[in-house]
Amino acid sequence: MQAILWLPFPLLASCVLVIALCCFGAGVAMVHLVRRFGGPLAERLPQPAFISVTATAWALALGFAASDVFSLNGMADRAAQAERSSISRLAGMAAPEALDRPEMQRTISDYAHEIMSVEWSTNHNRTASARANDLLQSLRLQIIAMTGEGVPEVLIGKTISDFDELQDARGIRLALGQSVLDETRWYLVFALSILTALNIGMVHAGAPRAARNALAVFCCALFMCLAILGLTADPYRTMHPSLLITESALAPLALT
Image (cartoon, rainbow, N blue to C red; front, top):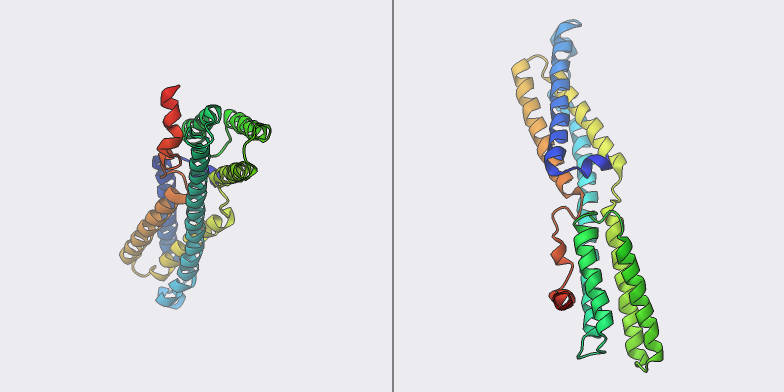
């Protein structure tokens, strides 16, 4: 399921369309089966209200899946904001008007460029960049070296705190990029979609044209809901990496 959600949107939409068409075909097949086999239709068809048995369960399952997706997107926004804030604070601390540590500022800028160009744009926040790990280790060693250079302990403590928050925010961003969606809820949505289509076909077996119309409306709703949720299931699909980095953090790159 996760592999499908990670597909480019055109392929994802194609997969969702196939699911919707399968539901439509299942409903139409149910109409023909009910009409072909058994006794009089009037004795075998359930009341129209019976559709609500599976349709309500389908709507609830879809709502639970949507809740997971929107919650994941909110967490991704907060993680990106936290990482942006940490990078900005570290860059400001290393600036000439503050601690005046050009090597640290270059390291921060290199890290910012690396996560924009590799972790976000290339790896889609699903795998860590080895160079970003090395840059974080370099930054850690530079902060440790500050303890023997007469830098006030208060500023060192603040820098360490910002560095720790940067690492935490990056870890959350990469974890969310790998997705923590509960796949069983998606399987439940698919199963209830088939059952609802079969239920629509059974209830409308006495009027095949009405059955096709009802199935067409249901499958269109299914396609639109799943396509939109699939588009947002990857929290970083619609985010631009520039939202993560401030201009002040990238400024030193122009000087190197």
